[in-house]
Image (tube, rainbow, N blue to C red):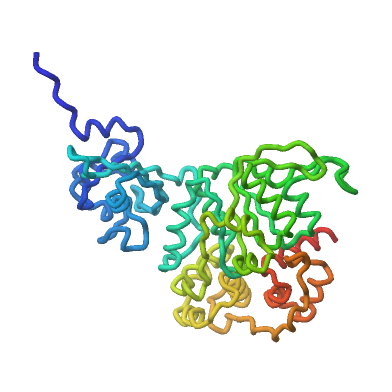
Length: 435
């Protein structure tokens, strides 16, 4: 009896339910499965034999030359499976985010001869990628790092100046993680007093302190199954740094006034604009907590180091307005003026400038005279608001005094207080809400 013929490569990959392709060491596509061809509306003859970057990225060069991690190159380099998030083009020519899982396919001698690449489109689950705008080299490097860490459970420490977009980077990591369907919870340590921040983070039991008329979940419990973003983490007083370290190491929280420990499944992303290592050296931040938080440190670049992104960012902020279409595209002289500015307030300052320009333009075309940049406030006196307990704690009196001394200049008031402008904004919002 004649033995059955071995199935072809195409027949084998057609068994797989998700889009899949086989790629050779020369970047050429060897085979695609039926799920891939249906998804992208192509026949096998249209893609087999072509280079993967030409098909998926519509680029004449490999994606590694455009600042991204190439799955083929990574698997050939390490011999191990590799995972990354990329931007591809769908059947209609629109950009879409996809998660790629590349696995090695070895020859008889055990060498990697091909890779198999699973393609998981993310657009059905996730909204359009509008969190990190720009394609500068600095931004591509940032996105590449965030893509690498997003699928993991690793704690991330975001570093960078005030206004660079650390919260946006944290949202990006959450969005492209396995926790994307869970909550994204933010706590700003700079806006809360010592007692309040302990209760906010860890919760409290009824009667734990005056005014605790009922039990309350802390933000660790609220963020169950999702991500907790701890902004201005260096503002935590030392006793709470110890408590935070215990939660990170054990995954257990104990409410204020309680005796029971509760398990929490939460990914922590922390952020600061401080020099954490200097604070560690000065004894104002626990060294063991620093090492626990900085398992994967990421520096978010200031806007002056990625000026190529300014036109796209400016257009992005305007497009979000109801009258955005009437304000775009920006005139070349407007873009030139934006590029000349040094942006000490980073992306937050750019957003404010564009908002102001749109108002001054009154629905018409934005002109250079509509761009109003804030002049630097007078130099601050040395240490007018001393830190308490090793970290600066905001009080109503200190915030109002700083704003009065800087003529309402929020960014300069924040600098004098030793916190970020976002922290001052959040504190003012809490003051208004509380009357």
